Image (cartoon, rainbow, N blue to C red; front, side, top):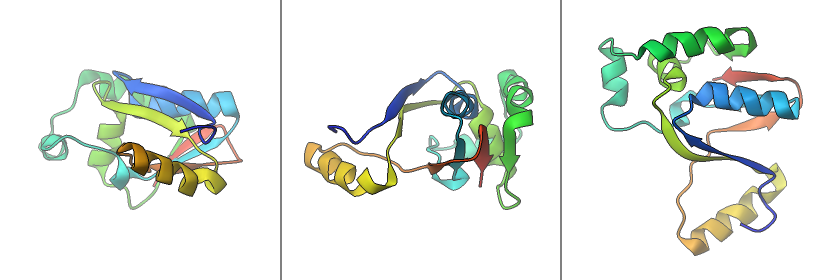
Length: 130
């Protein structure tokens, strides 16, 4: 990926929003995450809709609550999914907007899948789920 990525964090066994908040605080930035773009295993959202949630999700929600804004259109199951400590995603990477197309080309050539889940803004440090 060359010099396209400015920062990255392995996202394995770490709650998604807590991970984003830690990165936002380190950068003094705002992370705006698109709830519907978050990866979810088949059946995960249905399980959450049926009332299944880990005990750690509630603890994690309390931990990030003061630095979190949830958009009015975000379905509750996406909030729960983002708080679940048993999520495993892959690699959360920060890429400047002017390098996104270059990175996409390089990832295509390498046959690497990716998912864009949000953007980083100048104000912060906090996390916004939209």
